[in-house]
Structures are given as structure tokens and as C-alpha cells.
Length: 640
Image 1 (tube, rainbow, N blue to C red):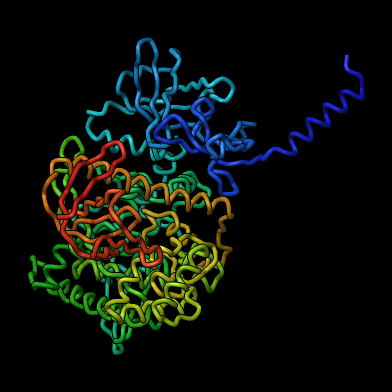
Image 2 (cartoon, rainbow, N blue to C red):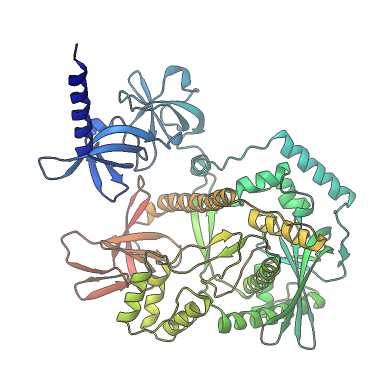
């Protein structure tokens, strides 16, 4: 046995060795090969050999000791697994000999996960599946997982839609509590019981204007001519009277965050029976609503506003196409004279509102929307560009004016969820200032409302400097929901809070609860910071699901267009090339220059110079559609 002095010496030696080691913590990142890296918290990339990667999953947080190998590169020795976030994933089921495996989707995975016989749930070769990790490979490099459920075969109709819903966990499950709550609300509507005392505004000639196929109609409009301008009445569906914050459907709405409009089918925030019928402002039916009445002068300024709980009845369900045909081409489509007069007044008022926003705020360029026709498999067969028309401007300007008015009400009462856009990111503000100095642009306090508006107006007035705007916008923070009022710099507004889509968005429903509390002299509900953070993440998750499914289907559609020419606009510029969006279809692809091609990239202006040509965001050019990489969901373009 070792004597106490020898043990003390060994312990001291061990402590000395440990103290001399370079320890680091970080996140594991996989590569297309078997090796990987640890992206350490102090900004280093530490190499992990294939043998070490066998014990890890992408995204794991680990502690490593860092050494320098014989090639002078940093290499890591695994010390401990600190955390593993991957609990569940989607992938494809594979059978190899007697072994059954799940192959996780996405470039971050580079391994097959074994599925034991008792956990296969009847899945078969090629199936898309949802899988739950049951054994981490840390101890011996052997990972195992269980099949949660089978999504379907790649050839199944609408499989891309089903797969995306599963990947982003959009398969919301209704409970008995949800159904009972839905039944109770439907019974209230059948009896005409609409909660608090409401002002009867059924005499106002409200109408809805939306896409012809829309069923969840949130808003209806009516207007009067006044001595000073217009009185615009905006009726918003009022689900808040029947859905309390902590009720089954109120909790579900908070969990969903919003209705997600995926190609091939919508994932609704509220049950379809309520969203499409009970709460929807259907024509010819008495409906509860929250009505904002806005006084608008001839300059388009909203000089006064009030809101009230009301009972309304929409007289017409009008489509954008029908209303635009009347306003732009005087095609009446058998509309009665009173309705025609209403629509012309709405068009006048919307133009006044638009003019005022252009003079005092910031208005983005109108971008067209794309209408996709799908076949029986859920694949795109045609894409139609729909440019903004007069009818859409009527609705858009009315909704923006209402949200501004609602934001002011909520701010004055210290409650609500506000949509805040805080301008340039802190980590990019230095680049922004350096760019402006190089361009000789004097700008003060560019992250204040007044300073930001002044900067954008300066850039807009110079044709050459306009090119900087898209690059600058890519250095800005995204807008987010906040319990505190703040400016929306992207729109050039002092405050903005959405209330106009409570059937489709939780933030709007929440703001209805706040406005109802204000009207009743009660305390408004609040959201804690953790709940708000989860809500913002949920909204980002829905947007990412929409983008991913759309890109997947566009890749399938584009494959047959290889070799065709198209005109588009540059959307992003990198060191390797630039991305282009085709005007007519919205298809986006990337022009990649070979590595050996001499290039000069300007990160501040986001321009790329190749030979004598400089490419910049917003540039119009012609491209040729190239190959499609279905695994990475990328479309290659070439210069025409």
C-alpha cells in the first residue's frame, strides 16, 4: 500500500496536471464526413476525430481538454457530456440486413440510429418517421431510439406537408377540454349570447374584403364622409369574450401562437368550427365585434379614435378581385349603388392614409404575392404572381391605422403586447457607422425613431445611395413582441400593437383581452418573460416551417424547369456568389462562382465584384435555372 505521503504526492501531481490543461466548453458541430468540431464558448473550433464523434450527437454541449496536434491544429479530448438537447427528431427509416435504423434529416446529422425490434411501431423501409432518443452514445458509441409514429412513405399524397408539420411539431392535439369549450361557445352563438353589453351597430353597412376562399374573416369595414374627412369603422372579430386567458382554448392559442398557413393546408390556432364559422364575420349574420372608429382628416391623419364592444352584421363578403375591378376599372359586378359608394369612399380614405404614412413614416415597397396551385399529391403545378391592387391597399391601410390606434390605447394603460423593431443590431452598429462615414452621410442617433427616419429619407433621395438600404436592413434586428411599448423603426412608427387578427394570432387575441379589461375598468392580463420568450420562439418556428415546406415544393417544381431563362432580383450577396428571386414565380436560387475565380466582397455594402461587374442587393438581372440539390433543398442558378 502507498503511504499517506505518496498518496498526497500523487494527488498533488494530478492537481498540477489538471491545472496545466486547457479546458473548454462548447457545442458539438458535425460535418459531411465522420469527424466534427466543438465550437467553444471562447470562439475556437476544436477538432474531434471520428472515434470521438461516435460518442456524440450534433448540438451536444461538452467539456473538452484542448491540445495541439502534430499538424498544429487544435484537437479535443472528451472530458464530460454537459447537456444533450436532441430528444426527438424526424428522419427516414432504413433497413440494412437484420438492422433497422433511423437516418435523421438535415446536414447536422451524419449517423444512423439503431431502432430495437420492440420499438419499431410497424415502420418499414423508406418511411418518414418521428423518433425519440432512448440511449445516448456517450458511454460506448452506441445510440438507440424509439419510433414515436410513422409519418408515411415519400410517395404518399401531401407527404411534404405532413413531414413539415411533424418536424416543427405543428400537430396540435385536441383534448376533451378543447371540444367541450368549443361546444359551449357554439351553443352561445346559437342562442345569441355574446357576453358583455354591446352597442348595436348593425345599421352600419359593414362588408368584408378578403381572398375569395377565405373563411376565417377577422375584419369588416364601413365608412362615412364627414366635414373634415372620413369616419372609418373597423370591426374586428371578438373571440376574447368567449375565450378567457386560462381557459382550454386560451391556453391552446398561447401554445400555438398563430395559425400557420402552409402550402397544402392551414394549421389553425383555434378550432375550425370557431375560426371559420362562429367567430368569423360571415355576411348576413349577427356577430360580436370590437369596433374601432377612426376620425381621418383630408391629409390622412387619424385625429381621434374610440373603441367599443358592438354587435354588427356584415352585408357582403367581397373578394379582392371584385373590389379592385370596381376601383380600378369601374366594373360593378352587380354591386348595389350604396355598396359601390362605400367602396369608393374606402379607396379615397386608404389613399389618404397611405399618403400620410409615406410623408411621416416609412413605407416598404409593395411586393407581389404568389398563388400556388397544387395537384392531388400536394405538389406545385403552377405559380401565379398577384400584384398588390387597390382592394388590398384598402384593407392594409385600415388595419395599420387600427393597430396604431390600438397601440396608443394599450400604451396609455401600460399593458398589451407591442410589436417592437429596435433597428440595427448592436454587433453591427460599428459597421453601419463606418459605412455611412465612407459614403459621406451624416446621421445622428440612427437607432432612434427620428434619426432612423431621417437616415432612410436621406438614402431614398439619392439613386446611388438607395442601393445601401437592402444591405443596411440585413444588419437590423427582427421585430419581436414586447410587453413594453417601443418604436417600430421598420415602419417609422412610435408604437405598434396588432389587434386585427385575433382568430389567427395569439398576440392579437391577448390585446383584445387587454382592451376588454380597459373598457371594464379591470386589471389587464400580463405575460411573464419566460412565456413571452416561448411565444416569440413559437412564432419563429411557424415561419421557418412555412419557408422550409415552400422551398421543398419549389425544388420539386423547379427540377423540370432546368435550362430555362428568367428575370429576377438579387436578394442576398455573399463571398461565394449571390441569391436571386425570380419575378414571375418567386423561385429563389444561388449563383455560385468557382473558388478560383477572383472576387472582391464588400461586407458592409454587401456587394461582390467579379471581373468588371459588381453585384448588389436589389439588382435586376437574367439567370438560367440550373440543377436542384434535393438533399440540401437548394436551386442552382447560372448567369444567362
